[in-house]
Image (cartoon, rainbow, N blue to C red; front, side, top):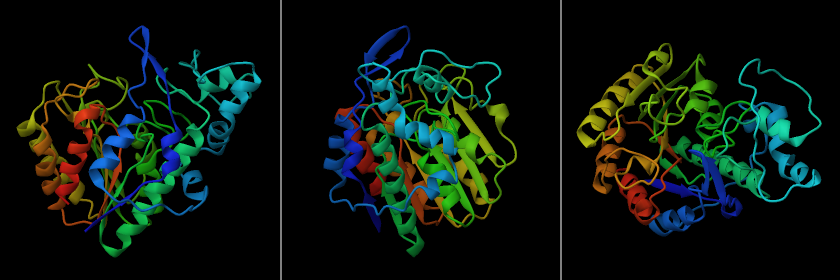
Length: 325
């Protein structure tokens, strides 16, 4: 059995643009993704509010406060539109107090594709609550799908990026209170999740993703970062089902060695062959096949939604994956 969770307040996050590759582009993480997925998965359950404490167990208090007030401070500074950073502390990043929202945006972010709008904090907060509701559902041994939006796996303790503001997978891994395996199968490396979980007892993190030598987030997720409780399996552009499935089998075997009692899957459907910002070659039926391999681990599983931007196929791809459970 699998239960699906969603909170309508996540819909209100409505970024209009992102800056990358030298230009301003329409936001890939837009509301059309919501309609596509909801139409495919059917009825959903609303989460309870479990408060700020599980978020604060993972994220820095100053960062959480910044997210909650950033857009208000942006408007107070006389700005319009969404809040974007433009200056970043590449060297010597350290806690500092600033009087300008521009500086804080750079202090707490690492890219120009993750704007903060009027509903960003509320959407991210309820996304985290949606994930926690899914986590709670796994206590009975069931599987759960948390439709979290915006995504979360690029967010770290005190930074946002990659459309991510709160790290839903890491929040649940820490809140679980039992040995946990975290599997990231988004096209892009879950750099924030790795950052948050590295060295943490009782948790293993494995990620299959595009080689960061060629793809975002570039600076994290290389194979030589593996070690301890981290396993990175970067794959080349054009990877199809056979190679992907082999890497998945390797990741699952490694995760099983940690004797987990719960599996958390950061699921991105941007591994699809038609995804507009990604370059793998999985097809819709492949997602059910991958899910069945994951189910063979025999663990209650929380699936947390991450990326996937081929809106016309997104619902079918999510439904295919969930069918495997």
